[in-house]
Length: 364
Image (cartoon, rainbow, N blue to C red):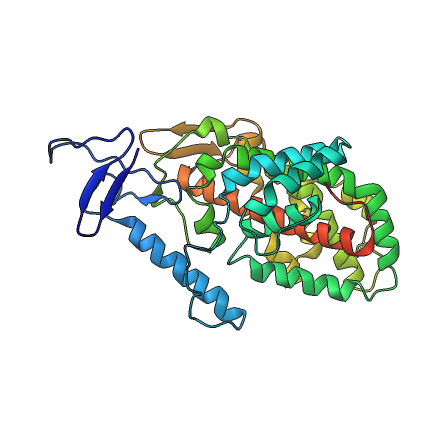
């Protein structure tokens, strides 16, 4: 439906919208695909959270520009500039090309790429599937997580100088890339397939704006997202072995030797403790800030119950779900899931960079 307000003209109604008589006694329903509401604001006719969220997003963008040494003057907007495709316009096209590539149908995949990217509003339109994925997932992590990406890039720049790096690249291409690529594809399908839910928090999370138990999501299709955190935890717990290998190189060891165990032994350990291997490296550890094994257990094993009226999720912590009852708002659950997804995308970008630059098999 549509409502158009024009200066010196007034208000007109578009498809599926008609003027109704004022009714101050009617209930207020807040709906927005790009942010959540505080419990005090939702359902209030006097609250305009979009204004606050818009201001916070602009502040986050200006902060990112300041860190990059750019002017605080935002570039002027022109109606003549091509409009950047929305996530849910672009993802089905990318997913199709990515799937075709995974199935060896490279010519068909390239036709998909050539038929879409020139109309997607990219400043530098990608010409290959790896370039398209790299740019697309990069956009999903900005502006805040760009600093974490830069930290990862700096660490790889150190690892490249180590004598065992070439052997690491060969091992990565032969032993890790294919399995990692499958996990990235499956997690992207799950997250972006439920983007109608995650979009309520995604840009807030990507801008480092807090979403916690004081917030309420207007849309709450819990059945669509209840398994996501657990599945993303599993994928992240597997794929951070790349960061462990990089850390081994940085600490002047062979890539497949940790301080006290071999890389193969490490790969057989419980996923919940795998990020400890690089906890002493701040740049690598920053990418693993969201990694909660208790929430993973509840999500992965169907141990969460959702009260739609209150917007709260209950689950039991502890081994086997035998611990104390924990609660988390659905909005906060979406935000933590989004953070975990973005962390995984940072590792994905790093793998794409290494594979593309040093000739290893691409994780697609």
